[in-house]
Length: 373
Image (cartoon, rainbow, N blue to C red; front, side):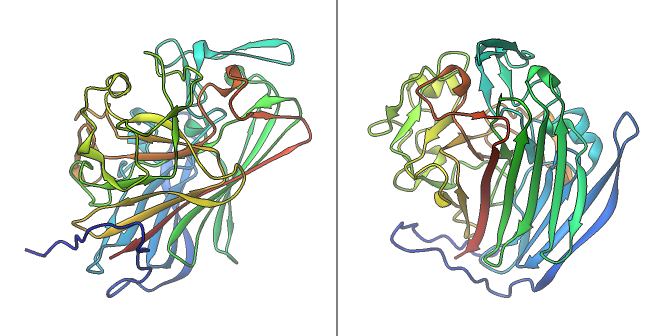
């Protein structure tokens, strides 16, 4: 049996950025047919390769279907949850690897008021609107363009005025590329012809060991505060200090160390399913979280320009989904770090604004960067 790579994780020590026997992909992008939607729209699968990383992305929902990176022994492995075939994503997907919008996370009662007008959205998560409604961006076929010079996959979508109840014709571009330092980068750009609200994110489920639960992963999140929620997972408006709570990840801590604590917020989320108010300035690209898995030695850093991140530990995976390679996904078999604005911000004036005004341009970036040690 191969030895695990595990060594104690210390913030003072940066993860190494080279691999033993790394893959040597030259930068490239290729395309293959991935199937069709129930309406008959063709769907493609794009494979990006660079250095020690390979990503496969479909233009259905902008879903990252696989993300392959080496462990500390140089052995490549897929670190994302998902399906082998398009039908799984269409039939039953908890947003595996998808682009999320118009509004990632929840809006209370599916309702908000903007410029004196109240907008009613679909209610698809208890009493609330989740991840853009019944047919959010994760269920749309995006227009794809290959930029071979980077290489990059440029996805675009036009969300019409009134789609899922949101105002304004919104034009969104999501560009996926691979970085020189083994990262998957996502750059969002959006414009609207009418004032609207916008919260774009990426909903990858990660497991750096490739299978099993993620309770042994050690997590660092650069946040002094989080947003506690009511019983329906809507923020109360409070920014609560993480100090002295199970939500303090300012020092690397195993996901499983406090996930079952007798804490009211843990009970409400059935584990971690909360937004963290990041310490970095909104708009600046910084490392805001780091995950380390001892048996594989893999490290994943999350960078973003966004002011918040939703840390979710796959609490509602229940064994009913059989994913890639026949793996059954059970509770806490994956975790998400969804860089975002805070949930229910349209109804919380004290939260950073999510209003995109007509004529303005939204830009944001999310990077998942990998190494091993």
